[in-house]
Image (cartoon, rainbow, N blue to C red; front, side, top):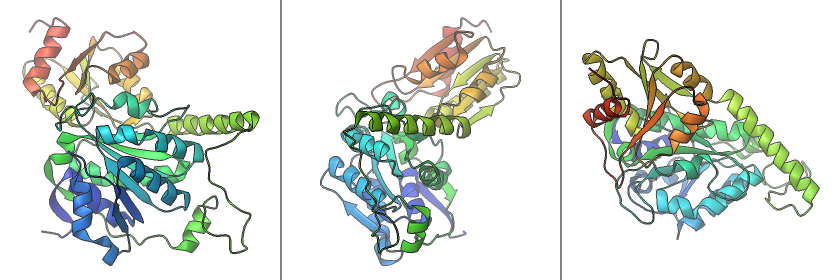
Length: 362
């Protein structure tokens, strides 16, 4: 087998992809179901090969602030966590958004509220897409549905973070983090040199060496007018991201009577539901948001044209459904089906829910 093709867990894939990207540093804290990210990095020992720093912080609060510091220097840094740990990172993410520094944050979601369960969930959707910390900010949120996308979205996430000077997230759930598939790793990239960082990130704290004015990376601005100006700049960036970076996969939506909208593991399950439905003569299509923010409004509106109903399938009590309803502007009936507490539905259960919600006669 090609040494670039490996059978691996989603969490392992994230770690290997970070090394291959040429990451400068990982700072994290173990929490199920994503602990294999840190464990794989420790096993691979990239500090001996690429020079990548791997550090287990004393807490998630410490980890996100280490990422903030590294990102302020223009370094390619990341952290990974799961839902309770992600809650602890919200202040740091708000600081990074206001400081306009690029970083990658991975959240492999588990059930809540509270410590909840170690099993999969998608109930962090609001926290991720609406800005879990204080202030008016957004992060780019990429939702993989396979181990290969766990790999691919590491590079995409960092590329977008540096392009827009923002935080990018990979938003998975315990199913995608723990499942094993064959996937292809990219070629090893070298880490950026200090000169490359100075050229690509002129805003970064890199040491002046007489070459530029002093850089200050901070989220604090005590002048109200200047802070308002900063906020208008942030909002302009978010509008640009919304114009340019919406991503969505549409499957069999050209002729469908009913549309399922789902992301991550639930999109995979819904793909099988769609096949079962078509075997029974029911034309069902699938829209899979790949960017949860910016939400793929344009593609979803296209897919919803002329359908009789939309079923939003989530591992939560109903969160993404709000964005779906806003997108279709009440022109199409929208219903929700979700499981809670770490339970994962079967394709047949999703099909039964579709038939029940819309009173379909077969």
